[in-house]
Image: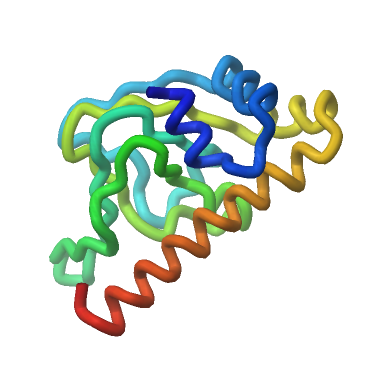
Length: 146
C-alpha cells in the first residue's frame, strides 16, 4: 500500500525517487482519536497517509469543531502548506482510526535534491497539485454546501 500512496501523493517523481523517498522517510503510527497536528503549530514535515483515516477540523472561539473536508486517507498528504510557508498548520488533524504515515522532513528533501537533478522542482510540483486539488474541493464545498 505504501508504494501506491507515494505514487498518488508524488505524481511528478520518478519510480527511483519514490522508492528512495519511501525508504528514507520515517514510519509513524497514531492511535484513533489522537491529535496528529494542531492548527497554528509548524510540524516541519509532510506526512503521507499509508493507512487509516484523518479528520481535518478547525475549532471556533466557542470550541465548536468544524470539519473542513472529507476525511483524508491512504495516498493523501498532510502538512504540505506549513512545510512550504512555515506559517503553521491551517487546521487540526485528528486520527479517526488508527493511522500509519510516512514522514518527510526538510533534511530528506535536501538530501535527495543533492542526488537527483530536478528533484526539488518535481517534489514541490507534486505538492502544488495536492494543494490545488484541495482548494478546488473546498471551493466546491463552499459554493454548493457539500
